[in-house]
Amino acid sequence: MNFDLADLRAFLAVADLGSFRAASETLHLSQSALSRRVDKLEDALGVALFTRTTRKVELTTVGRTFVHRARNILNEVDSSLLGIHDLAERLSGEVTLACVPSAVGHFLPSVFEDYHRHYPRIRIRVLDEASSDVLLAVTRGDADFGVTYIGTQEADIEFMPLIEEAFVLACPSHHLLGKRKSVAWRELTEHHYIALAQGSGNRFLIDQALAHSPSRPRWFCEVNHVPALVSLVAAGLGIGVVPRMALPPEGHEGLSAVPLVEPQVSRTLGLISRRGRPLRPAAQLLYDMLVAKKTYGE
Image 1 (cartoon, rainbow, N blue to C red):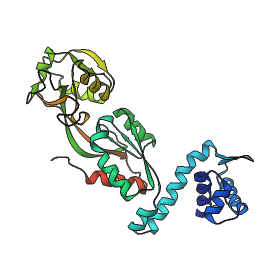
Image 2 (cartoon, rainbow, N blue to C red):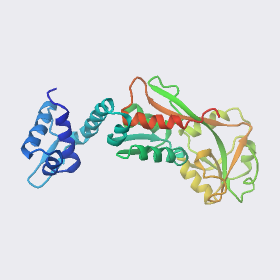
Image 3 (spheres, rainbow, N blue to C red):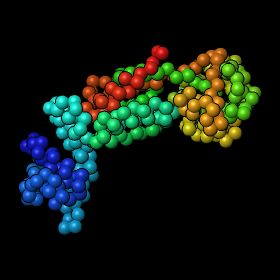
Image 4 (cartoon, helix red, strand yellow):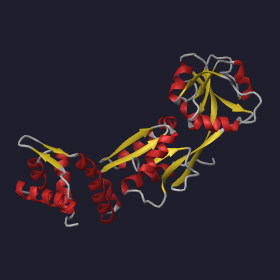
């Protein structure tokens, strides 16, 4: 295609500033020279990137999509030419991470804090979705990579294990079971039990582990997502089973996390990415920081 990096920089300047005049001043170009560069890029791509009127400039639908691709191209060029210190200062753009909601609060904040401190010009988008939707977002390319517990059997997905997480009993601290050191699954049949809905990844793991159990808990209320279950437990409606990271630290918000035994059930939380497709530089930096926090097997 007949365009160069200067044309991409001109396009991004107009897209970011929403004005040809402001972009020309920022790039120290005349408005006519800037307009020629954008026209050249549009001709090369065969699409209109902006809609122009006498009062404003707006990105077209194609233009909004191309913003991310253009920024990624420039970031990759920068990453190959700059030292790591300069890269941290200049690298910009956006990383999209899909993550199961139960892992967001406990697993991501400290990493995000470090990442933002090192790369302040890169924005992070989090798609907090159910496990199946996290997998779908990664396979479709809507997310750069994901944090979830499914995908190990997918041929097109790379799975990097991070942490083994147990399922625990969630109950109010004042509940009869709240002060126990452990609770057997069969004991849950004696209490008001709130369950995760069939079709969810967590419910599948629980059902699989209890497939041969003679006394499985009978639910009186069923919800789709872990945060909803935790909210109902906190309100005193009943007890439920959730991944450990879905609950706050012990002693907070009046909730207890009691280890479950006979059997013990757990899930392996890890990073998923598309096999054979290298991550963009900004996404790779975040991925590497998450791997550095790895506690799997400890």
